Length: 332
Image (cartoon, rainbow, N blue to C red; front, top):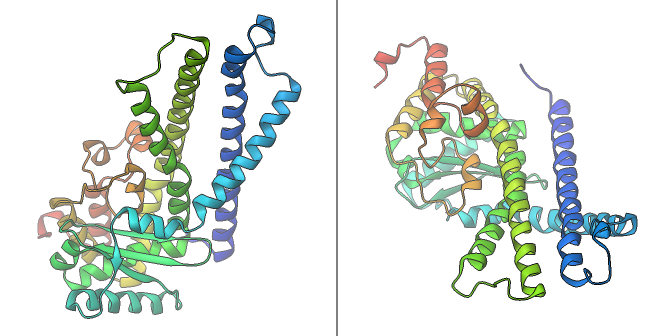
């Protein structure tokens, strides 16, 4: 099913407002719950057990704190999110002096013309892995990147198919959704790591006093809330991932008129090292295939649809081969 640019913008707007609402609700939930250990720690002697839960005034304060915290989180996460993602995966601008890089840049320019002049920056990850990615933001900036290993392994027509796939993410708005989701919720993984180290260290706080016990309870509660929120964000990302990959494949077919080239590229990528070098798993959704091979990604069913970031590569290859009217046995 095709979408007009108006429909795409409407979808992105609803998605953005939905993410912002989730963010506000998260901070309100956290602020409201954290009032309980605060009362247990500092106010238990002055209040009875029935007043542990926040009253209306405290709930209103929690909502105001949530609105401010959510707005600040949104601003600092979205601002510069493309650069942070590029830094996180070690990508660098393509070098026009390099022959393979120059071919990649030419392919980007050709795809840009085919997409109505949409400007996209070419970036390269200097590793031998086989993968590609796309990023975009609210300013209209778009980035398509590949690994050095992919440039070395693919023929030009196969590279064109991969670039067409990544352009599909950008023009459909999918890459913006992925980039925003990673920028907003990726911080929770870092916070969970920090709290986990604090609670598990040799110098961890013990329940020797009311204040230290309350602080430990506070950290445990925050960790639990972060874990739930991280899980919800992962489910959101996983829900979007599978269908957007199929949509980007279809756009690649229309741009290149060569579905066989994409099938060949996916086959080469699936047989090689995909690049399990990411420091944060939340960035896996930006790549054409999951950098970390998981058997779950190659299976089908409700469980796989919920918990895998990408559709099965072999199924994507089969769809492309069907479009090219080629049998799997003939694929080199």
